[in-house]
Image (tube, rainbow, N blue to C red; front, side, top):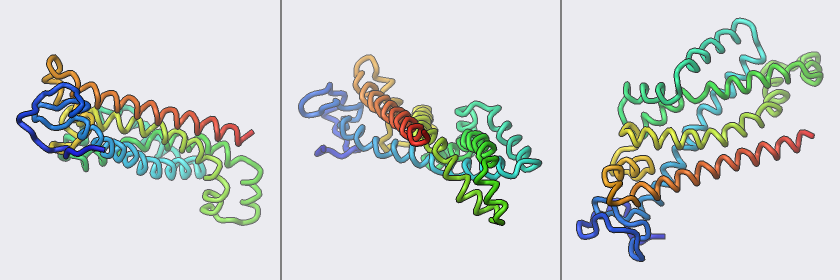
Length: 242
């Protein structure tokens, strides 16, 4: 691990290059960059996973309801989805953060409000197909309630696609969180976060390249890792369906 604190200022060690004492160098306040990057990993993982969970649950539930019942309810839900889809993800998220107040709470709220629509469309399309299967028709004939049919017969068969998308969506949430922190709308100082560290280091890019390089590398590697997890889940679930 590390013997430094992420916010430990050392005026004598400002902008030091990577060395045996400071593996990733130091920033403009003399703070150990390795420590800040490691501590920031926890924040970025919390943002990625936490910003995915609520849209996953909300979008899956709306997709099930829309696809199962159809009719006017389906039209209403899908028109709302179309309205949200008409705005670019980042533009809408930034607008919501600007309306509220910059910070990690506003970051979560903005991504919760704009991230559900993809799950809704995905689950709705799967539900429309599954509800026409014979075992669902048999459940209706037996007099099972709509809630039981949705939870016991439909949800298990549409959830896999939502889970696979969710693994990839973590990457999007992490990148969006880092981008908004870079713009000063997300995680605020002195909290360590990869996007915020990159933003702090851009001023010293010509003389202290390491401040932006290492958090950028960690962000890229994390994104690649979750993308591979999503691909692996997709292959695994596809193999089970055969």
